[in-house]
Image (cartoon, rainbow, N blue to C red):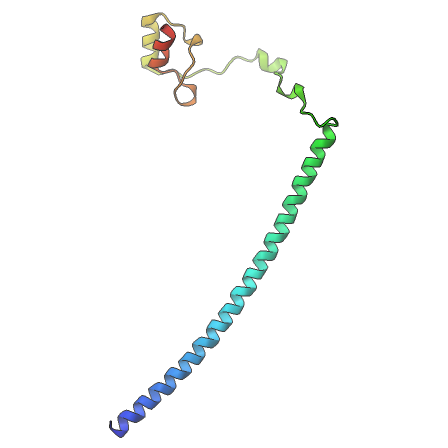
Length: 130
């Protein structure tokens, strides 16, 4: 190898060593920042968990205080008079099901819909007709 080539290789080797050292320092600095960020996130998660647990415990405690016997309130499931007086929601019916109901003489108020959202379909009308 020529003198110039050896000198160039030595310079490149030195540059490479310097770059490795710089990269090592960058990686260490980045690792430290990531570790700090993860520790902050973990602390935030712990605080949030404590807050949620406290909220849920107080909600459960409030519920027990409202029901001294620990049993569910039976009146809660009963319909109110207002609810009983309300008109039932109008059930959707396909046009084909309406036509088929007229043909078969089926009262659509007596048909339970099996379609999306309780929609009455032709097969529902035909089943109701028997």
